[in-house]
Amino acid sequence: MAGHRRVQVSNVGDVTVVRFVDRKILDEANIQELGQELFQLIEEDHRKNLLLNFSSVEFLSSAALGKLITLDKKVKAHRGKLKLSNIRPEIYEVFAITKLNKLFDIKDDEADALAVF
Amino acid sequence: MSHPVWSWTFERVIPSKVGAHQSIVEEILDRLEQEQWSTHDVFSVRMALEEALCNAIKHGNRLDHEKKVAICGKMSPSRLWIRVSDEGAGFRPEHVPDCTDPANIERPCGRGIMLMRCYMNRVEYNEAGNVVEMEKERAGSVEPV
Image: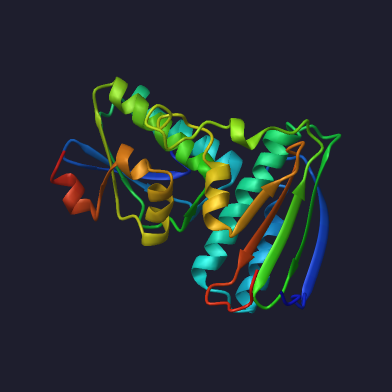
């Protein structure tokens, strides 16, 4: 497994928990790299169940949302599950405005999310 | 309608290069924070600037180093006005698919303009679609826009 620069990865049972290194996910080059690291977890490391913990994320742009949507498609194509947790209110508002709160399964915290895989 | 007293005006020209807009974005947000605009207002302006400037650099000028992006604006105690211009061919905002439509919800693109409209009080494109003007009214402000 290659090293990661944009995410920190740990395992809880058969769930891969991903935390973001960047507090503000907006730099185009970083978003590209983030996408590659997330896609690699599914396509190369063959992890099926992903939990993205957003506790450190203070801002994200629409380009980052695009990567999450593509990740969701890849997880579904590999018959896995993707869940999001620990999203602070101002970030949740971004998901709500774009109605992506309907696309993604968003839980309050890691424990809630891990309980429903 | 009263005329706002602009306490700060700015004008910058930046290259069509990924990330070239970050320093002016931070400068504007620093000003808002100095003037004690709310955290949500600062978040809103960051979102609108990020989306408008990325659109201008990537989709407008298509990262063409020969083309520039101009950003100018002015700030009063209760209002921020910004104009972003690129040298691209422009586009028709009404032709951008509604990304909240269930048929489009899985499209990875097309959310930037929607976010700009939600987070700013006014967003208007020129007819060609290569200049966008945006205004943000400070939360709790009583000054009419």
